Image (cartoon, rainbow, N blue to C red; front, top):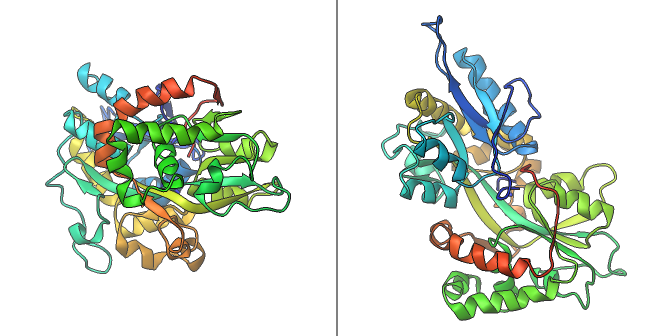
Length: 383
């Protein structure tokens, strides 16, 4: 929902002080508490930087520290599972809880890189609903516990098209009626689903179509319409800058980041939710963490009804617990990408299992296609 991942190219995790609320996405590592036998372990929590990390810091990290009198170290990373794999394979695990996309959670779990959370005891919802029924579909797996529901949408620069307004995802690829450069995230996810939907493939048939060589070729053929002047981005705020600066007329954008940024002073773009791709993020514990029980305690707290509602109050991603929805303001409900405000807009749920199995294959082909002419924006991982 996030709500969004400037992820792939930059791999280095950067530790930052737990006091730095505005620091980048979080990567937290349990530190030694020698000499403080009564003090709880100091875990390290790793996530995405920017507004999303701020929402987590204020929504549940700081409250958890206050209520447990413990300290959580927060670090950021750029997504993916390479850093987790490196830590696990080198027996040097320094992260204790990581915020992962659903597809990455499944991939890391399948590779044995995460601790088993299938038997974790989670609190019931604030309304008494058992946890297994309170979380949305896909938010619980053998190695993960849900955090947010987030989405990717597209945005267009205001007044760029002589009074015409892009209305559907088809218009993202229509450079005749809506000319100008486009920007997309440097990843095959979302853009390939969009290409097929814009080419007339029903959303329920998108992944079956991408399963075939013909379907992949069809997606790339549609994407050729936006090749001229195409730019790519990694950080969630990068498309905001590109649109406001007039570098592109339309861009893929993380829905929540975009909606919030479009309300800022000087913003000159509008977010359109048609065709949005909905995804989830989940908490996971890297295999070999020295503080597994403390990490589980943190996850229990952070994934509770109140914690998720608090987090969403600072950045309107969708909570993964249904019981959190009743605690959101009407204004927030109108902004979350899986909320009632956008029910009339076309959307598709990202098939995380499918991407976990096929991302490597399509990433290679996407990079080959991209090398034909896209300009890459600045890297970073701000949500």
